[in-house]
Every structure is written in structure tokens, then in C-alpha cells.
Length: 430
Ligand SMILES: *Cc1c(COP(=O)(O)O)cnc(C)c1O
Image (cartoon, rainbow, N blue to C red; front, side, top):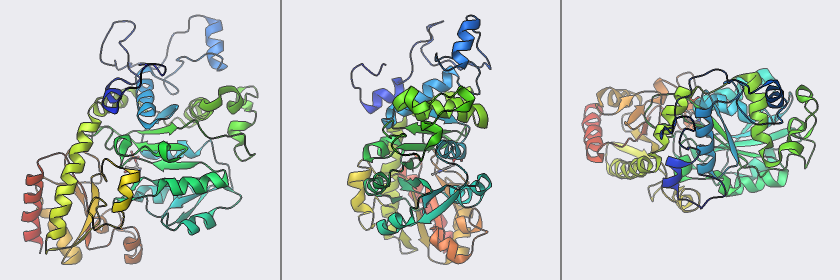
């Protein structure tokens, strides 16, 4: 399926994009190329590959044919020009920022991010000399005010964990544009089936492929997709992409590779030197998962709508945060940001607080109590007694993880069974 061919629909592309029958054997399914290295045709071929004068396979820390199919597939589904896969979602976030940042530079990040991302951005990136300023992305004036001369990216989630809040991507992209700064969107919870951030003005899209893209809780992985639309040479803010690269004889990535500059940099410098590579087995599992992405997401959304509506009416429940409910303050944003649905991730508050939540989690049978989301099976976690245990009650509240709240990731089982399971456990809990 080539870029110049006919325009296919999402369901066709999720199965075919990037894949072609194996040239050596005709194998129809993408083989797992379980190899570390690739034989050069001759010494000249090897030299051309190492000089980036010719594109090809050298060593699997950089590129691998199975991983390359996944990269092309995710890039196609997201409407980007290229992608680089990584060993996890968190690796993808570091890889996404790496070409943009230098010591002393900062990012502006949403307060409503996956808990692990808050820790990565507020603590760990300081070791690189980077920092993050956290803002409420619903407060556009605060977003504008958070930018300074050293800001090199703004980072948010399309559908934000854990409450399922929807970000006004177009508004944030407008602010980023005015500042000449790339917008990076974590699209893990939405997937390209529900939301395509690049269509709303995002420069880069990051994924934890661990979640819905793989879809069954088997392998960790991540991906960075480049829109190819950002002008890295418009200012002197992105020297890694616009200025001569000493490790490649002074090659300028933007000048040489044009819209593919970011993707080439991520492979030729990012994967080469940081080594956060996805392995071909993981790429295989994720390719399998993506073949059924649209079908699963339709059922995830359908089930989440049913379960959330049932919970909202239940007297044992104080509130439900699902943006797919007409009562949600984010309901109006669905039409523009994710018209096929608000995902399958939300929180609800149980009357009886912390103790009732712990009992609820202990009494659920179909829902698994795990620190994961985006699995075919339904998952639950009581954040206050687990992932957000170290935070003060005020911090837990701000993160959407108050002691009286549990987070669910609604799976693709029978919705009636999920409701019955919740009913039984709520009885035991309250
Ligand atoms: C899980 C997750 C991550 C981190 O991904 P890993 O694959 O666990 O490293 C980042 N962002 C979101 C929204 C996630 O759900």
C-alpha cells in the first residue's frame, strides 16, 4: 500500500498499511525478523548506509523490518509522515522530547497527565537539565502565560487519564503555533480511531502501544509520530534539527531530509545513542492488535457509555467523570475532538469513601485490579491506595485520584455482565 495509491479507509489501513507480502517467501503475514544485523551488499553499500546516503537496514537497535511495518502503520493511521517505535510509552516520551531539548530548556505540560508522566516530567527529566511547567490546559490564558524563551514544547493528552477529560486540541495548537513551538499530544487513551491530533494541529503524537493499540495486555511499547509539518529552521530554537550535526560530518537534518527530518533524527541519533528500541516480537504483537483496533474501540466506547450511564443513576455512586455522559462538562468537545466516542476510561466516586473503594475493588470478579489500561478485559484501580499512595489528599484530588474514587478501563466483554459485576461489588462495599 503506497503513499501514491488510492485513499483507503481506516479499517483497510489498520490491516494493510506498511505491510506487503514478504519479498523472499511471499509470507502474507508480516514475518518476525528475529535478527540483530543485516548483511551489506559490499563495502560501498555499508559506507552509504552509515553516511545516511542510502536508507536500509544496518543493525536492529536502529531499524528492523518488522518494527518498520508497525512504524509505517501507526504513522499512516495518525496521518503523519513517519514514526519511530520505542521500548515503552515512557521511552517514546523521552524520545519525542530529545531532538527538541537542551539543558536549561523547558516544556509546558498539562496538569492532567498519566501519573507516570507527571513523575517523569516533574522529577526525572531534571537530570537532563530539562524542566516542566504544569498548567491546566482548560485555562488558555494560563497556558499562554506559562511559555517563556526557553520553552521548546507543549505536552498534553487528547483524552486525559484518569478522568477521561477531553482537551481542546485546536485551541492549544493555536497557542503553540503563535509561539513557534511544537505541540506534542499523547494519544494513548483515544487511539487514532477516536482522535487524530495531527488533524487538529499537533506536531508530534506519542503513544504507549502497550495499551489499546496492542489491545490485550501482552507487550510494552511506544511510538512517536511526526506530522512533518513543523518548520524546524524558522527559528534558532531547534539546532539539533536545523544546524550541522557533528556526528554525521556536519549534516543538517532539516535541510537534508525536509519533512522527514524529525523521524530520521529520532532513528539516526535517538535510537542510535539512547537505545530505547522496540524489539520485533513486541512489534508483531502490536501489529496483530492494530488489525482489529476499530472494532475493539467501537465496543470499548459502547460498553463505557452503558456502564457509565448505569453508574451515574446508581444511588451508591456520587459522580462519574465519563465525558461521554451528557452531564459531563467535556461532552460538547466530543463532537470536534473525538467524534466516534470519548474512549473507555473514567473514574467514579463511591459513597463510603476510601474503605468502600477498597471493598469494591476486592469484590469485583470480572474487573481485574491492575495498574494498566486499554486491555480487552475490564480493569479497575483504586489510585489512592496504589499508584497515588505517596501523594497528599490535596494532590490526589488535583490528579483526579481522590480517596473516594476508582478508575475503570472498560473492556469489550458483555456490558450486562460488567454492570452485574459492579452491582454485586457495590452491594458488598456500601
Ligand atoms: C501507560 C501510559 C503511558 C506510559 O506508557 P508505558 O508503555 O507504560 O511506558 C503514557 N501515557 C499514557 C496516557 C499511558 O496510559
